[in-house]
Structure formats: structure tokens, C-alpha cells
Image (cartoon, rainbow, N blue to C red; front, side):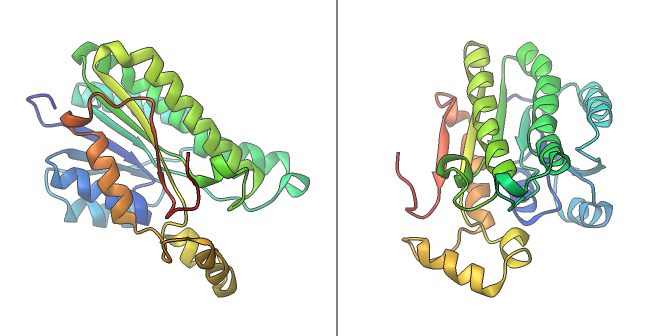
Length: 246
């Protein structure tokens, strides 16, 4: 990493996975910018983290607001060194029952925001010839929606395509772009949006016999943003407990 304090931006930081990623990056010495729409948990998390973490309350479905925020933040901090596009909303509806409103809502948060943020941080990364972008995809992208609905699965597949495109464009500039594709992470998506019957049915499908923990995703992010991961770009790390091999 560069000599100055590394600036890391994490979206969806109020959720279980996002908060774990933020904690990991703070432990690694980063100053973490916590992005989410929920102010209370963001402020609480920012107060807990070392390194001058800050809460950035932002509606990621509002493209103009995202563009304005990333311009302001890159100017204020002299660039963003690490971007983790973690924010996402779940949709379980299959194609026949997915409305265009739902499709656009999922795409706006899960894909469009990641694109706008990545586009916004890349000039600073290119100027420094160092940067890390990590996109949180999902097993749903590789399974055709076995674990989620159509809009969500397509959005997470788009995150992989975005990862590949950024990696290809920036590989010679000291920047890496990678993705993580978890399945069944123990978060609010599992604990609150699924019934006990649904949770047990999903648990029975996982060969390792348990759900993934948010800290495991955070550990993978920590590795991908480290200097020793500089030769890895355009990769998708599967974290699915043996559900899928490739």
C-alpha cells in the first residue's frame, strides 16, 4: 500500500457483511468511509472503528447523489485507495413475477452504484498507480438463481462482468479488481428474510454443513487488498462451502 494512510470506502457498511469488512480494513490500518442509507448503525460503527472512520449516509439508488458524493470524497481525501462494492438488495422473485420497477431497483443499487463508484475512484488510483477494487458478487450469479430471484442473480452476474472489465483495463496500472461470490452468509438476508424452514432447507444443501460467517468474507477482502495480492486480478473467489466448483 502507499505511504499515506490508505483510504477505503465500503458500501452497505450497515449490514453484517459490510460491517465485518469495515472492521477488517480498519484493523489493517485503513481509514474507512462507511457508506449506507441507515445513519444510526453507521454512526455507531464509525465510533467503534480506529483510524478516523467516517459515516457517509447515501442512497445508492440515486445516481446523481452517488456521483456527487464520490466526487466530493475523492477531492477531500486525495483519492480512494480501496473500494469495496458490497451493497446489495435481495429479490427472490423469478422472471415471471419480476416487475420492471423491481428489476430497475435491484439493478440501481446492486450494479449501477458499483459502476459509478468504480468510475469515480479510478482516476485517482491511476494517478497513484495503485488501487484495489473488490466487488461482492454471489453464488446466485453462477447458479442461475438457485439461491435467489432473477433480478438479483443477474445483478450479481453483472458484478462479475464489471470486475473483469475493470481488471482488463487497469492491469498495467498497479490496480487490481476482483470479486467474491459467497453463498449463504449468516446475515440479515438469512436471519430475517428467510423462514426457519427455508434456512434449514438451504443448510441441508451445503456440503460443509454450516453457513458462511461475515468475518470469512471480510478476511478474503483483506487478502485481496493486501500488497501480496497484487498479482491477482480479474479473479472470482467462490465462498460457498462446496456447493460449486470451477
